Length: 620
Ligand code: B12
Ligand code: SF4
Image (cartoon, rainbow, N blue to C red; front, side, top):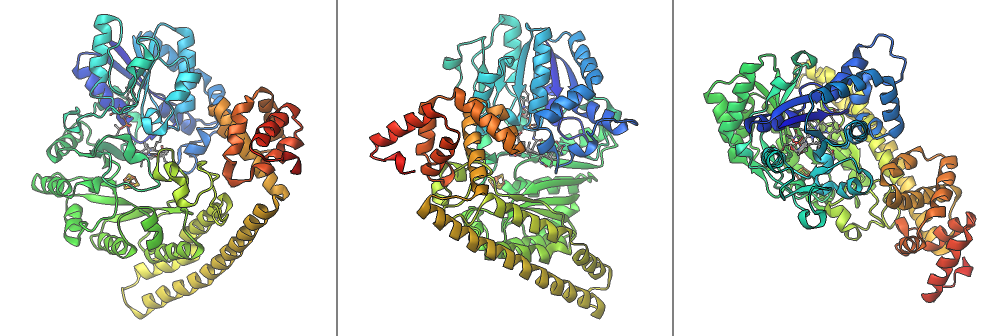
């Protein structure tokens, strides 16, 4: 069967899209005729090489800092479609001239909007073609399937997990029978009875049986080949409370090290331009014996490569193992550190303490492996002092040239934080706007903590001292002088950070008590409340645009949209919403906001329901 595999913007551009090269390889092995279309890189290169780019879209949108913001913005995607209409329509013509029976999209959160727009155009032209969606956007844990069911009628089949084991057989069956076979983790719109066939399940491939990625589907010169992904493990052995990544697979699998080494040799032979291998996984260190065996193989077989990967801190990462990893070509490790406060680490269920983290990082540095660590600031329960502890830790490791990788704590769907938010004293589990019951941890506080952490990472003056320290002879008088001087500046800076955060914390607590006792709110709160109400309501009506609208957050937009939504709103649902007391804001404040909008019908309904509960709303 002819199958087209498509990667839309935005995703990684340095190497061919890994999912497509794996799926293509598996499909080819089963006799299917495959073509891959990497629209992501085509458009990226068109922008990069354009001499008179009149749009304000530029390659920077593909950087880690901008990618999520830009490519989840409808206006941005519309502009992209307008500006690159020619390339996009040429690609569509190319896809259609191949005349595939099935068109597969590999979709991430960052390529969802573009993929859907392209799906709509293609379906409009050839409604008889079957469109499959798969990739992280469709994973069960991210709960997007309902959205697809309800508002994306052009998508026929959704795969909510690994694709390489079942997709080829599924398509062979379709080719022979004209319909689809009930397959675990696949949802079908029309070809089968959806309620009967779909179980909320995760298709998980046996990663020892996946084929080597086939990179020949792609235009070789389009990539810099800086990093070639090769899979080393899937899933995770840990259960961090803020994380939903481990829930994407049923179990942790570490790929047979012999297979990983063989694939590396195979890819190197095919493409000697590859500089470094990216060993893809959530946590490479989930199987320490596997890591040792993999390193031994690379050393014994003298496979001279460099590789990067990511892993969690654990005590088994001994100086000996880290040295072995270096010898086997380990070039860079990304650690999921998240915090340097023992209290916060416990709340995060990270399973280690600061002392161990510091030991592992120091040993990594001694083994001469470059490294970095991710941080999450503003975890519920992190107080100002805990945050300052993390800043001290960052300062300590800045001299190893670590890069800024800090995020404000969000509450991902299906994480423990999301499912049991009461346990963390959170007043609502809205992903980014959540706050703690005592009001000390708010969206603004988290943004501020993130800002200060980045400020430390990017501090030119402290970094200059560190550079001097590194260049000079270790423990020489001058190097120590630079070292202590950098601490002197740091102390001055961190005291002002502590002061600002402490003042805001006291102010926020007082505000919480004031609101609780009086029900009164200041103007800026009322804007925030409107945003939250709008978001909550809109999420139920039009999930796709909810975030867009909130992101704009202009008064005008809010009011227009709020009015529009209230006009069409099912009042019962609104009442249920009020009972939940969104974001810990007392219902009376929400009601007052609604009264300001003077939507009489809704207010009457609310009044009736509240009266039944013995609450007289006229007091508010
Ligand atoms: C390695 C990795 C990276 C590497 C990429 C290396 C590379 N060259 O590919 C790096 C570090 C660069 C990276 C960066 C980012 N990443 Co990343 N990354 C991962 C990670 C850990 C593994 C991805 C991977 O390659 N897996 C192996 C491949 C084969 O798996 P796959 O793509 O999922 O494909 C399988 C299935 O999904 C399915 N499938 C896929 N497509 C299709 C299509 C059909 C039709 C079917 C049937 C099946 C199917 O079958 C495939 C084979 O089994 C995942 C988390 C994880 N554990 O999966 C996050 C992940 C994919 N990344 C994510 C994000 C958000 C990002 C960033 C946007 C973060 C940021 N802001 O910086 C950036 C974007 C990069 C950029 N600027 O372009 C998110 C995506 C969230 C989402 N819901 O879409 C994930 C899931 C992490 C998370 N939990 O948040 N990432
Ligand atoms: S180690 Fe990483 S992938 Fe595993 S549960 Fe923790 S945050 Fe998630």
